Length: 265
Image 1: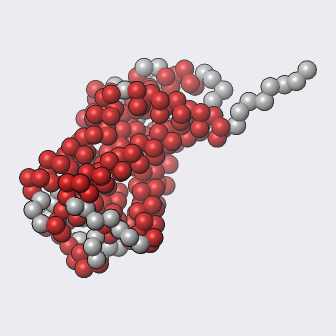
Image 2 (image 1 turned 180 degrees about the vertical axis):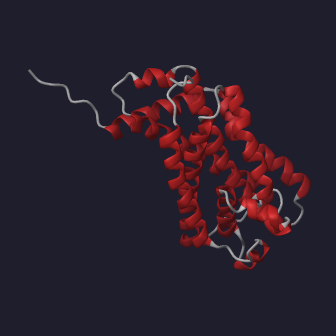
Image 3 (image 1 turned 120 degrees about the vertical axis):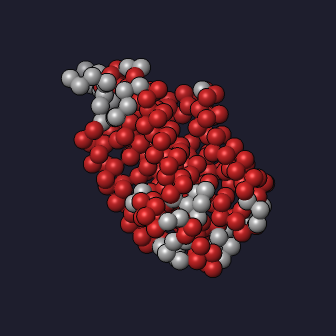
């Protein structure tokens, strides 16, 4: 008699990721609010406030960073709350699928949707604001590691904070409030060098500032644009350290705060 061999953790996680992606792209509200909203904001705010080519280049780069964080932090956090609220997590807990596989599935969802978001924002930047794309492999390499660290760290933080919310309605405020505030403190709408020092200091503690600064270093026409940053340089080494630290913090927070259900029992 042969014993059936269960799929491994990674295989189950990838299968779960495929399911997550199908559900995500079937729901029109996901495409409208999660993916399209940053692009619409980029169009509206950029058209109203951005007049010079140099400012357009920096604004587009910042909005690309903010859009990716919106998908990973807000989008993933809302997704976990919805799974908890409708009983999906409770049902999954009763299956042989490991906890790790569930998160692999969510990571697949976040990486694909964030990449889709990035491509959309880059396209809007090129078509509307004449965004000039980098031509060197080193610049695209920087884009890649900032993208990966930004998505992973903010996804973990989003999952951890989602444990505070008991419903998707309350999750909207719990996740969107810090995200909106941090956009003003992180150089998305206002360059950090123009902010009071106290606000710059607060913004520098969180990943959004470093993701946007990393992307500005990628899309800047030359390194002279670094003088517009609070420190007068791109600080790529510090960007990697801060995002790496937040990834570790996120892992600890998720391991201590994650809940399968809304009950405390």
